[in-house]
Image 1 (spheres, rainbow, N blue to C red):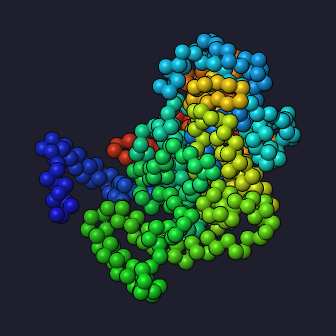
Image 2: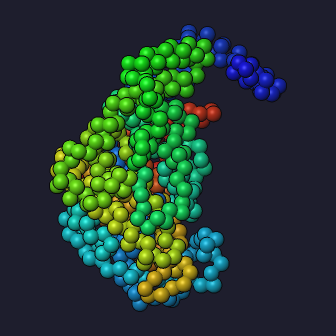
Length: 502
């Protein structure tokens, strides 16, 4: 059926009259303004190219290391030695302050405190020092390059809305991802590779309870050309990239030229921007056939590089291999690279699972920072590490001194950044003795949900605003009009945390 006819049949009587009235008014306004509105409607994608970056960027690209599941901040970064004396005591009511908790622990008769069983060492970061868990021996060696944020927070308390929130700026599905916004605002720096690449990592423990949906790197209401391209570790790196048997390069070129002509006819007739996006995607796929094999060919990497990243870097699909691949993508000008590593959801058996998770990522994270630095890329590459929320100081399930579990905790968690114009050797924000609430400089608990601009607290909107700032983008100006409203990644919130920046 003709799409226009189908649309007419689906339109209600009220919609018909409403659109007719709007059309008359628009025509009158167009006449009064002498046609100055011609071509502006729906041209956000074209207009934005002239507006961004808003100012000189400190970073040319982002590498986002996302630890899906919620890493335990008090077992890795947020050292709370006084909790040792609080073992198995109930969490004081004045600390919890009626906080909403998940159904996984809301039925517990009590909330016993579970101190971290791991040793912490204070490492020289060029400032007052930073405490790092024994589970991160490699990362501890590069703390002089890190900006550690202890006072991250979010309103979301369960995985799917929390991951969706930090990735898209909304707990509800349907919004563009951070990488898609970057692609839309800044475009590509390499015409032969995608602007936004996503890598998924194997998990040694095999425990990956939380699903990762494609909407986390999707485009929402933006054109589909801005979607993240997931590179696979086995078979074709990009699905259906290889030509079928009997089709050579020249034949494929002729086919694409003919398909493009047909699509141009459809675009001229219907004006659907998705048709234009499809033409671009076909052309990108053709160029990927040449560029991806070169990208994935690791034969040029030296033994010293593999020693730096660890033996796991030789196995495709591991976090280490993906970090090495991320460096290769950065060298080739890919603007946004995201690596997902699942399994950081230790509701029980933390002592068994958390060390395995850390072993998967620790050496590779440190290697990536060092590799970028020695190649002169770190200053212009913003590297981010963290998950969607933190973990509770109280135990979920049985508690022993040797093992315990922790529930989700959105009130405070830890992330770090490096390179790309952030202050190296910095520790920002502080939490109370229970790693439960963010506190001010005098140690008094603060409630940032009342005021999103509370000093010392970093909301996920603040994080995203700061990331865009380092790319030269004012987050309040990176907008897209959809369904009568101007949308942006940070919604109506967020501010740049200037204390984190050089």
